[in-house]
Amino acid sequence: MAPFDRVRWLFRNAGRNLLGAFPSLPTERSGVGSEAACEARSWRGSPSRLVSDMVLRRELAAVFAGRSVSILDVGCGSGGARRHFADAGLSGTYLGVDIDDRFDREGVWPSLESQFVESDAHMADLPQADLVFSFSALEHIPEDRQLIERLRGVLQPRGIQMHVVPAGWALVAYLWHGYRHYHCGAIRARFDMERTRVIAIGGVGSLLLHTLYIAIPEMLLRVNLRSRMPGFYGLLVALALKVDRVLPFWPTNYVVIERADEA
Image: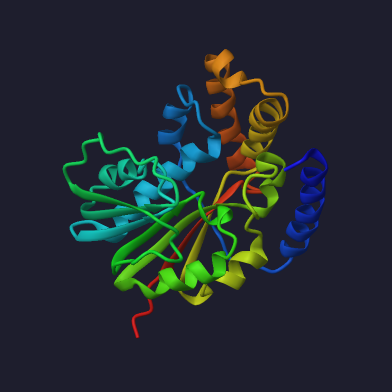
C-alpha cells in the first residue's frame, strides 16, 4: 500500500477494533510460567509467539494424545507447524495448503506423512481432517468467514479447528499486517461460541515490547534491533512475560479452538 493508504487503513481498523472490543468474549489465560521464562533469554521471535508455541503444544497433546490424526494446515508456508505437532506427540498424516509454494520438503518428520498442495484453500479439494490448523493465516484471507465455514465442514467427529490470530488490541504491534485483527466481535461472529474456547496470548508487556522493539524499528524504520542486541532482547522478553502476568490486558493474539459438531 502507498503511505496514505496505510494511514487510512490504520484509522479505519482502529475504529473497527475499538467498536468490536465491546461485545463480551469469555477467554482463558495462556497459563505458561517457568517453561516460557527459561526459553525467553534465548528467544528471537515476538514474546507472543513464544507463548503461542507453548500453548499449541499443550492443547494439541491434551486433545490428540494416543491418537493417529489427519491434519490440514491452511496457509502452511514452509510447513513449520509440523514442529508443534511432533513436539506434542502427534502422528498420522499432514496436508499443507498454501497459495505460494514455500514448503520445506527437506525436513524429516518421521511421525507425520507429509504432503503439500499449492492452491487457494477456498478452491482446493480438502480431505476430511481431525485437526484443521492455521497460524497467522486467517487475517490474510479476504473472505475468511466463508473459509471458516468450509473448514468446519471437513472436520471429523471429535475433531477441532485451531487458529492463531492477531487480537484487536494488537493494531499498534502488527500495523497493516493482513486484512484485519480479530477483536471480540469478530471472533463471536465467526465461531460457534458454545463449542469454542478462546485463549488470550500476551498482555501489556508483550504488546509494548512488540510495538516498541519490533513494529516501529522493523516495519517503520527498517532497523532490526533484535539481531543487533540479541542478549538484551532476550532480557526484555523475559521481563515482558513477567509484566503480562501482572497486567494481563490487551492481548496480542488469540488461540481459537472450535470443536466439531457431533450431531
